Length: 499
Image 1 (cartoon, helix red, strand yellow):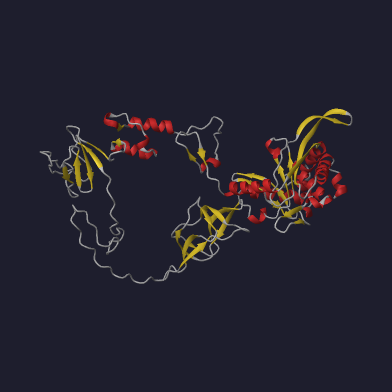
Image 2: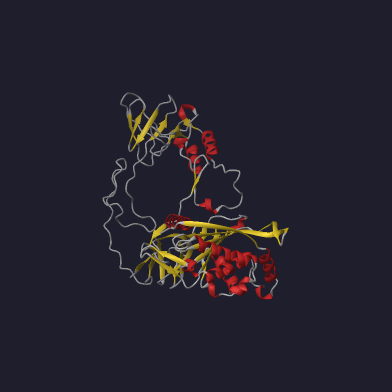
């Protein structure tokens, strides 16, 4: 006997309440094994693959890509005993005799009775929309409702049973006359059928099909045809006006941030649901901005010696398999500053009203990804050599940009660097990553006139900005931390002394 098991969405990270279904790796009818990947979900700013806890056959998927599902909700059903034999079906009573065709009666029990394989049973009755038939002569109309037809002059006729020829005539020989029109909605070849009742747009079937294919509502199209009929030209003109008109500033390349949006009828707006990474980033930033009192200090520094060090490291065989950038030296400078001022490496516990000082540094690196901003962190970065730090940053950012960073890689950060210089920006006022006391913004490095040893010379210059939580870090401490970072960037040899 089949044994159905429903797989509930698990908590893939600490405190997870919901996740978005990104992509299914199985389909109904597929045979799965234990630990085979069933689905990819997006949550806590990362993509997570969920494996199957059972072996069996997938019977149905209970969520579709794009759905946001609460933890504990069934997302897939698996038959864990597909080879078991189901009990023999109990023979059903023969279906009730068909009622008179003209009356349109149904079987006594919808869905009951023995059926041929692949045909199913009769469904519930559906109401037929009124259809207006334009007579070939005189221009009068007829409205078909169920099994009767009412002509424009008030006379009533009967709709013939299915199978009556499309050429059946209509008796119009006197008041209260009875006659018939074809139930298939056709009239003699000289007539025109419009499949809408009173109060709706009038159009011929080809025009109506064109509107459906273009995804348009006929009621919104202005009619210019005789008698208020919507013509093909009306539909095409409306479609041209409703076509999305992108701004000239839009690039021609792929825009994933628009892919899930809905374009307005006039093409001037696209509405994109706030979900996944963008939603969580917004929540975190609002919480941080309105919970921690932010203070930012700035420093402009000559980093010419740092640029020379970067060039030497790039030529060093030991660093041949890693990417050496000024960000690497900045990260090391920040770690040295935290070593000299460990009180900046802390968090404010609002629930217990305590300051928690961390005796380790999990260095966050803000990374821009197609799904939004994420901040994974290099675990125990204070223990790493410069080469180890370079490898850690490279692996972490590559993993994050591929969308595969796990919730664990983004949890428990203690201090963060955001590299706005990679976008050509001089500096900014960064917002704290929730739970951290400080964040360093590293700006673009440019050659500028600079006074060096009493002379104006072209030097490599950058701007640093340190934002900090004023509940934990006062102005003096924040300024000392930033000054130490700047000192190492100005003269990297200081790192040998402080390290």
